[in-house]
Every structure is written in structure tokens, then in C-alpha cells.
Length: 149
Image 1 (cartoon, rainbow, N blue to C red):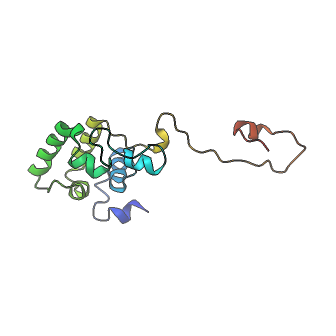
Image 2 (image 1 turned 90 degrees about the vertical axis):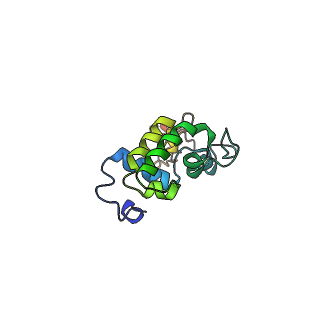
Image 3 (image 1 turned 180 degrees about the horizontal axis):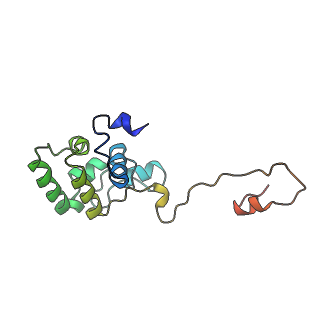
């Protein structure tokens, strides 16, 4: 889905930097390295927060997780001073709160990069078939991809 469909009223000034737009977009869609999303991709056993033992979602981290109490308190203070209700949808929808959400994410150490950036994971490799096929030897391309015929 295109960003303009999700953020129609916020473009173009809201998503002024690539890193800010990436962070907000991934938090809105839930596609970040929180345990719940990682469990959907079989990268975490149960998707639960290590501290609270409930699903570690964006809402959980922004609103209730005890691991981020101090950072959340600062974010909540700023957001409420801006006149924004402190709820995940309102915070992520607000242009005024965006940079403060980015600061919360960076301070908290929440990873919003691709799941394939996780240590110990690798993007699945496509299996290649040599074209055109020639004799029964494994080609150089197959060796690189660890594919045997």
C-alpha cells in the first residue's frame, strides 16, 4: 500500500525526512522488530513482551510497557502539552508529535528497521536453475546460492 493512502492529510510536509517517514510508517503498520511482529515471521517464539508477558505490540510499547516508563512519561508530557490525546492512533496520526515519537523510539532502542536486519537472520535466497542447462556440473551461480541439483 502506498504511503499517500495511509497518510493522505499528512503529506508532503509531514514525511519530510526518510528516517522519520520510515519510523512512523512502520509503527503505524506494526512492521517493526517488536516481538509480536517477529513471532508472525517465526523469528520469536511467542510474541510476548519479555518484561510484561503480554503481546509486545506498538500499542503496548507506546502506552503501557513498564520497560519504557520514563521515556513514555516524557513523550506523554510533550504530547499532552500539544493538546493531543495520548493514544497510539492519535500520536501516530499527529504531525506535531512525529518528531517526539521518533525521539521516543531512538531513546527506547526500539528497532524499526527491516526484520532481515536482525542479527542471525538472513533474507531467504532464491533458488536458481542454470539456464540453459549444460552438463551435470554445478554452476558458479548455484554454488553462491548453496543450491544443489
